[in-house]
Image (cartoon, rainbow over all chains, first blue to last red; front, side, top):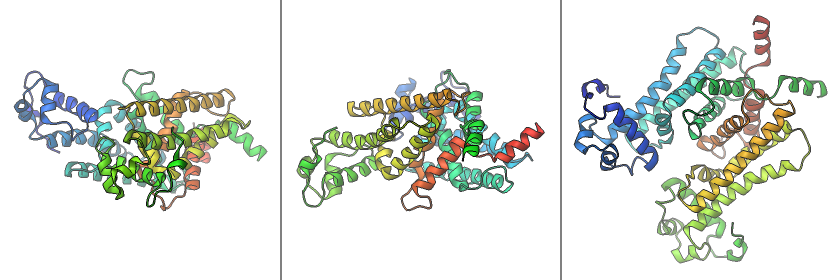
Length: 209
Length: 209
């Protein structure tokens, strides 16, 4: 939640963002606890003091990385709060936006999803994830109330299943693969909102049933 | 893949299954590498040699635990291979069956999903997971070919999104919660096959569109 990136920029080789990218990859590969500032310095080809020029501590690196993912996800919700469309349409936008955040910030979201609450920074990130989930659940409830989304499933289960599906993308998505973010977002919407079954198949079932 | 559980049973306090349950919880809590046989012995209130009476090594404990999850998941596919229904109906059965395995063997599947391939046992488990995914993908392709499942999404993406949704259940499901496995399986099927959007909502869109 520090906002002094611009003050610390300009060092040759790596700026703050470059260090963050490398640190996030290392945290994912070795785990946060196992990644010492010395390991990071080796990986960057910098001295530890060069890293401390940009970040006060390893904890601050983690905080900035988790902020990056959380700010982007929260931004998706903010972007739809202002609009006045149906809740179902805003839910559509939130799901699409979340897929784009995952694809654009894959390693940052991967790190966020691995957080288990072992430190104060991690606990704050978990609290923000829970707040995000509650807002998505509220949006699902709104869509259920307006009659655009089926109401026979608990809204919190709906939001967990939807984000379970979306978050799982970090497990297999690789930049430059066959699917770009737009197509992937379309696919998620197709499964989540319209379902996989062909409409004709449903109608046949109704006729037979 | 050892099958000598019955030979080693009968020790007072913990049978092989009981040790396995406790070990799986410890592996999830501390990580496999950080859980020594000494840690396990403390947690069980047994001597290390009492554990070695049941398992040749920590690696064998992990192998048995992963087998437990994989055998159950593979069993779901076997159970549907024999039936002769439409592929869409068999897919329905596979998804429901997988939800039940997750709920019934929550900690075992949680452990399986955390495996990253650091040891030979882990690599074998990952290979079996990939084989499972391929069989689900083939089932989706079959359903697409018979015209019961939409074919505008790549079958491997469909199976990844579906199992992303299902596997995420381990993150939040707790036994004795509000949803039982049957209701949860219904919810997954409702989202995955029929979609969240109310049919009337679609029809209105079509009329307006």
